[in-house]
Image (tube, rainbow over all chains, first blue to last red; front, side, top):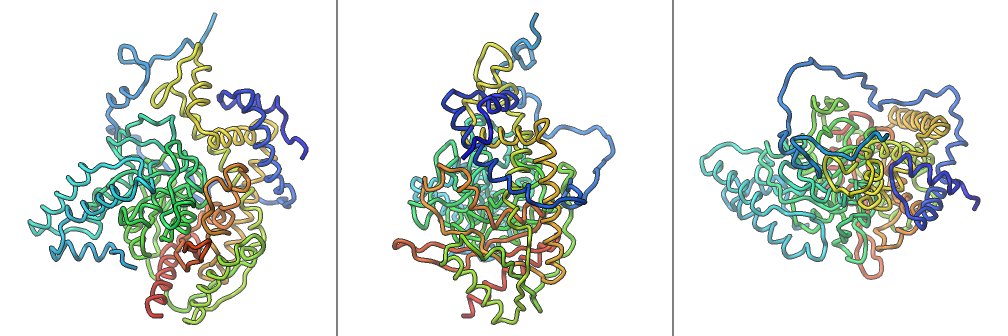
Length: 99
Length: 474
């Protein structure tokens, strides 16, 4: 079976997905993704000229409501307690911008 | 069948034959006895369940009116949140996640007085057809412990089949309620897309996900569907199903020839054809129909679903909640957390979806799939001008053995080939047990799938119920 997807592409997708991969896994995922891509390629045979793409299957459009103040369903302290790293009531993360 | 239905339990409660606490205790005892082997539950709340049962008993003692679901013991798939309860989606990344609110369906069950026993096992983030992808170990099929219960709602199906709860909630993105229901010999119903609010369901593929009941009989599934459905301001895609009239006369059944071809186990085919024959003998009109784009259903599914997965699962970053792996930079924190705490199938689908949505591939994959999705929906629309419901097998095979399909992802994906159509077209569909086959000395159940037109949920339910009546009278 020809390689549907290159090792470089797998690295690029993993990077975009923010997923770390070991060297061994890179090869495994290259094979797995390749076999699925081979399978879904059968859609290329379908004539879709003049067909509209479906956005919402039941045909609903934008659902709007009044912009009113309400209380949250979840307690804010409970939400904060779930963050692994916190400081002074804030969620703490590593530095985003570097010099 | 020896099980007690919701109505029978309700009658016992009302006549004070048994108390809610006695009933709850008997199911908790069943979990204690059987679940070491079956592993259908990821967590059980004895205390909470008994407390709720006590409340129901007090109401009965005071002579207050109680609904049909009051005191009914439930299992909830562990991708649906229950306030104050751990909700893992069977993933390491949510190992310590405690839900800060109730899903709308949970709130509705609680308001109806249901007793929630615990949370049931699933494939990680509902991605799989066997529960083998659960980070906490697979569930076993109660009919043969060497075989899978199906998935992803395998824990819910096994719990109901093994009588560890009366009914359970599951979610169905490509067949995840119906396929395990068929494998475990219970009823599983997915409604029209949007008929049941998904607020509080851990999202997998938002244009396909539906919550629904797994139960021992069609009537139980209907009672639960009645209780959980309805428009919800917290789910903008939710809709109201208006037609509640039950159809039982002059039923026209469509048999799509594309669903009875190659790749079906001959015993499965025989059982399903036998069930359809029962309808014919009882006056239904059987008609061959064609769904010409059915063969593309699975390919459409394996583009749309991973694409939506890659977006929905981007939220698991190890920062605000869930597991966290420390690293030198923010982006390395993300990478490491997601590498360590997502299983193989989840990572495979996120990466596949990232690829199909990436610049240069989006039109060729995603947009094209959305167009073929339209063609598949049109096929169904055309068919439902001729017939009331469509009948097919739920699965091409009987429950398979552990490990049989876990090496090759595509072979696992093929077990959804008959169920994905309803998801892609947003249609209501039910799986009901329609027969048994003997495989290597074990009796294994076979499921019949009944698919209805959009919003015709009650047609599907009433026509499914007819089969139970045929069986009782024969």
